[in-house]
Image 1 (cartoon, rainbow, N blue to C red):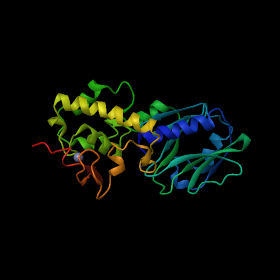
Image 2: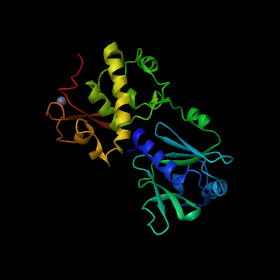
Image 3: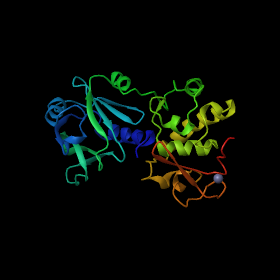
Image 4: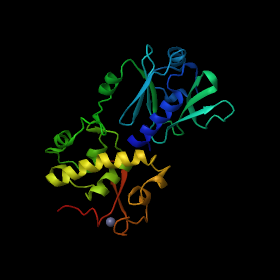
Amino acid sequence: MPELPDVELYKRHLDTTCLGRTIRHVAVGDARILADVSAAELARRLEGARIIASRRHGKHLLVDLGPPGWLTLHFGMNGSLVHFTDGEDDPPYDRVRLDFAGGHHLAYVNPRLLGRVGLAPDADAFIAAEGLGLDALDPRFDLAAFERSLAGRKRDVKSLLMDQEVVAGIGNIYSDEILFQAGINPRTRCDRLDAGARQHLFERIKAVLETAITSGAGAERLVDRLPSSFLIPHREKGGRCPRCGGEIASAKFSGRTAYYCPRCQPEVA
Ligand SMILES: [Zn+2]
């Protein structure tokens, strides 16, 4: 499922293929993906607008269209963005398609309809209304900010990392990777992490996300591009730890399955 590195790659895909282009036509393939806007209203607002800039915040991609405001994209479980030109096939599960001059098209693809496409007058107001914390790669999300979010919290560190109100962008897959690289068991209570563990964890948050972006890694789809020392390529039943060779274990955290190495990530007594 798309997390920060995936959405960052979608942003770069959009920027290189569609920035500066004017939307001629909007086709809504399935209006159930729309948040608080009808297909007709979306088309009316977007047609004639130009893609001025884009901005990613956590797992959201926000597209600046000037006077009509911002197009907001969330990718849910398996959404993506696909640019194509006349003569190429429209990708399957194309829920919203923007048609530009010169035969260019941008498809918002989402097989399971679990994402959202909407409009917002202002990006910062949208982020505030969604209750999102700082983006995990925002320089303002520094060690001090991270320490503040951990202080006195009895909840497990895995759930905290996935909490978009604490820090935006990390989901089930990358929280597993970050905890694996930090050698921290996902069940560890936040208030049991000592100063060294907190700093190490903070550094792995930034490093894992940056490495995933530079590897061009999109969650499970492009998993082979990640370094083999990462947990993610081995993150499955029967998988082997890339560090010690031991068997990877799994456990449920708020309905999501976490994977970890019981040897490299021992439980704290
Ligand atoms: Zn191990």
